[in-house]
Amino acid sequence: GAGVSQSPRYKVTKRGQDVALRCDPISGHVSLYWYRQALGQGPEFLTYFNYEAQQDKSGLPNDRFSAERPEGSISTLTIQRTEQRDSAMYRCASSLSGTGLTSPLHFGNGTRLTVT
Amino acid sequence: RKEVEQDPGPFNVPEGATVAFNCTYSNSASQSFFWYRQDCRKEPKLLMSVYSSGNEDGRFTAQLNRASQYISLLIRDSKLSDSATYLCVVRTGGYQKVTFGTGTKLQVIP
Image (cartoon, rainbow over all chains, first blue to last red; front, side):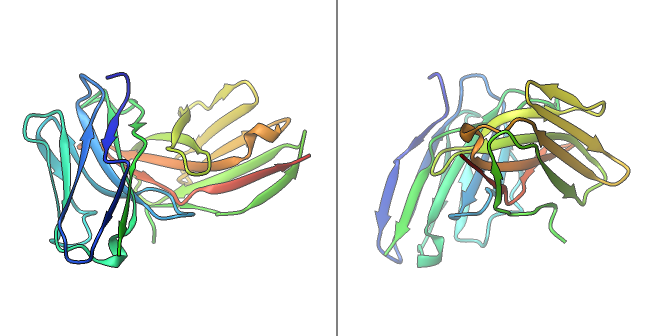
């Protein structure tokens, strides 16, 4: 597609349920990033991939969070046993270059997760 | 210390004013720098990259000071449409971790 696509746009789930958030990056983009953004705050880094390799997952808050990008394109961020504190906007971004340092990030519209 | 720090503001300035934001970063190995703009409830969008020699795009000027590890954004002749949150972004080489600051909110007043 023309831009980064995230689904669903909104997700309401009950505490304890698992959720899977999907990101479809811009075609041909090597790098894919996941961020979490609370209202009034900047995006908080979670993890990122170059192709299918997860290069850094230091931002994942705990082991309930995981991400994959098995074929180097679409990525899924999974949150197991959701808690209310997981409620936030989850944003995905992709960039063209896997080795260059100047490619900007292109963001999707985000998934608003609400845990009740 | 946070990897990227910004004054959250808000900066309330009248139309036509000049306003400047600074951002400091902690990792001296950081190699690429950007300013992003985020409108309320929208996704962040690239405003401009920041080059070592400094760069200008219309009313916007970005500068990098590696010795002091900060970047700046100057907006001249502020417009109402400039009201937004401005995010400082730092990319660290090697595997390219990209870190955002918390953002500086700008409100341009008629």
